[in-house]
Image 1 (cartoon, helix red, strand yellow):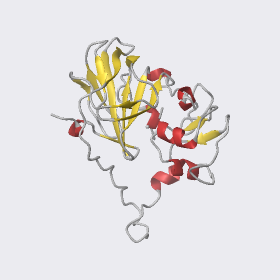
Image 2: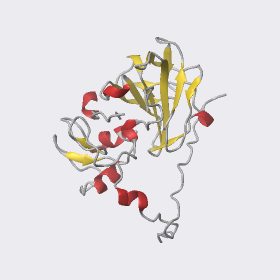
Image 3: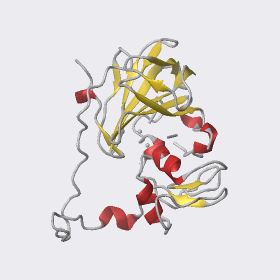
Image 4: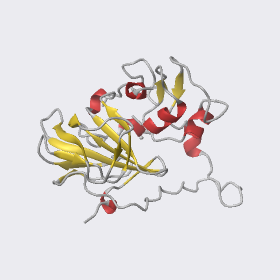
Length: 244
C-alpha cells in the first residue's frame, strides 16, 4: 500500500494507529515504523519523513505519528521538544535504524548487553468501550497489523472508546478515508479509521460512548471501522482492553 502524505496542518496547524483497507496486514500508516526510509511517497518525501505545513508544531506532528516530541527533536538535531519548525522543512518522524538497534538502558543508566530485546509495550490500564459491535474482520498481529477491524453496516454509529479530546478529525490521509484520533491521557491514544462521515472536530471533548463518526466502507465495499490503541506511541492489542 502506498504511503500518502501526512497532513497535521489540515486540522489547523493526525494527531500514531491501519484502517479498513485493501491490505489489512499493513501497519496503520500514521504511526508505522517499518517502511524503508528510501521509499518515496507520492508527495516526494521519503517514507518515515514529513514535510512541515503552515501552522504545524513539533508537538502536533509528534502526536500525528505516535511519537514523543523529544524523540523527533533528537532524530532531527533540534534544540528541544519546543523548537520551532518551518513550513517546507522535512522532518524524520520514524525512528532511525540506529534507534531501533541501540542497546536499551537498564536501571542505573548502564546499557544492557547487546542483543537484549527491547521491552514490549506495556498495556495501558484503561477500560475501553467497543466503538462498534460487529464481527472482528481483522485481529491484532504484532509486526503485521496495528489494530483490529470491526465489521458492521455503513452508516451505523462509531463511538468513542473512552472519554478524551479529539486531536485529529479529517481526511488528510487519503488512503484511510475520514479518520478520528482521540487522546485519552498522556499514555493512551485511540484511532478510528475509514469512516463515512465525521461527527466531531479537532479539540472537541468527547465522552465514552459518544458518537464520533458514521461507519464507512473500504474500496471493496466492506463496511467496518479500523480501531487502534497506542500506549506510549506503541500499538497494543485492543481486544483485552475492550469491555466484555
